[in-house]
Image 1: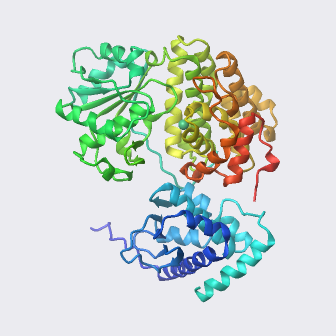
Image 2 (image 1 turned 135 degrees about the horizontal axis):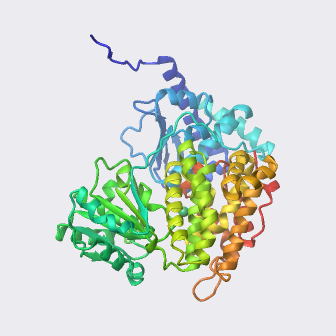
Image 3 (image 1 turned 90 degrees about the vertical axis):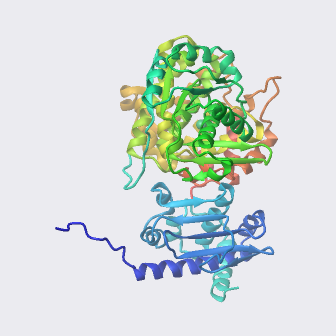
Length: 176
Length: 415
Ligand SMILES: [Fe+2]
C-alpha cells in the first residue's frame, strides 16, 4: 500500500516565463534609470566599484544580475558568471515570485510574510530596495505601482514622472 | 488584530522567574549534563554585588567559581576570543551570562566559537550559518529592557577592522533565561526608566510593524499592560520586589514579541542617534516612541487603537470613541514619559535636546540631526516599518523629537 507519492514540483513553464521576462525587463530598466533618474544615479554612486546584485527566485531561478562597471550600471543577464554578488534579494519560490512580480501581492505583504530574503550587507540591500522602488514607479501605472511600493511618490514633479518615464522606457526597449 | 496567512514564531527558551529563581541554576545545569559553567559579566554588575548573589545562589553543587567580570560596555571580537580561550583552557561546559545587551552578545559569540571549535567567528556571521545546537547558555538579565535573553541575534564588533558582524540563528537563543528580582533591585531610577521604555518600544513596535502576527501580538499586549502599570512603580520604589519582577517578565515578553515580529522607525532612528551621538539606546526609545506611533498612524490606526485596552483599562477604552483611541495611546505614552521625568527629578529626558552627557553638555546638538537622518538610511529596521521613510521624513521626525513637540501629521507624506 503506497499512500505516499512523490510530489513533483512541476516545471510551471508559464510562471517561469513570466518571471524571466519581468526580470529581464526590470534589469534593463535599472540600467536605464541609472542614466535618467538623479536619485537612482546617486544611490549607485554610493555603492562600491564593481558592486553587483541579483534578484530572483529560489531554488533555481530565474535571476537577474545588475552590476557597476567603471562607474556605469549594466544589466548583466540572468547569471552572475562567476562575478561576486554583494547583495542577493531572493524570493522564496517561483510561485511566490509570480505572485509578487505580477502584483497580486504587495511587496510590503511579501516582506511581512517572510517571502523575501535579503543576503548581504544591510546598507547596500537598503539602497537596492530604494532603487527598485523608483524603477517600479517608472515602469508601472500608479494603481499597480502603489501595490509594488510601500508608498507611491505622488509628490514627484510631472517632469520627473513623465519625462523620466519616457526616458526609462525608451532606453529599456533599446537596451541603452 | 490582523490575521496574516503566513508567519513564523519561535521561542524555545526555558524561562524561570521569581524572587528566588537563581537557586534553580544547579538543577538546570545538571539536567543538561553541565558541571563547570564559565560565568561572564561586566565590572558594573560585579561591582554592584550581583555576581556574588548569583554565586551564593548556585552554592557548591556545581563548580561556578570561574568568573570573567571584565566584558567592556562596547564588547568586541577580541573579548570574545579571549574569553573563549579561557573557557577552553578550563574545560568549561556551559556559559552563564549575567548582565545587559553587551554581555549577552559576548556570551553568544563565545558560544559560537567554543561550540563550533571555530578559529574565525566571521565564518558564522549572517543568518542561518549555524547548523546545530551550541553549549548550554543561561542568560540572567540585569536590566529590564533589552530582551536579549530571548532573542536569536547577536552583534559583535571588530574594532580592528571597523566591522560590525550580525549573527542570526535560533541556535543563538539562550537555553534558559533566569528572571530574578534581585538582579534589578539596585538599578538606579533613571536607568530603570529608560530600559523600561526600551521594553515598551519593543512591545509597541512589534504590535504595529509589518511582521506582527497573533502570537507576537499576545506577547506585546501583555507586555504593554505590565510596563505601563509597573514601570512608574519600579522607578519610584526601586526596592519594590514585585514591581521589579513584573518589569523583568514584561521586558522578556516584549523581547519575545519583537524578536518574532521585528521593529521599525523608532529603532531605526534610535540606532542612528545612538551611533552618531553615543546616547543610551533606552533614552532614544523613550523619546522616539510617540513619534513612531504618530508617523505610522494613518496606516495602522486600528491596531494602535487596540493598545489602549491594556494601557488604560476597560473603562477608558470604552469611553474613548474608536477613531480617537490610537491618538489617546500616543498621549498616554507621552504622559508616561512626563511621569518618569518627574519621578527621576528630570533625569529622564523627554526630548532629544534634553539629553545631557556626564559633564552636563547637550549630547544631541540640533545641527547634528541631518547626520542622524542620513545614518538611519543605512539601518535595516526601516524594512519592517509600515510607512516608507526617506531622508526628509527622518529629518522631520528628528526635528520634532528634538523640540519635544508632537509630530505635525499633516506633513507626513502619505503617497
Ligand atoms: Fe530596543
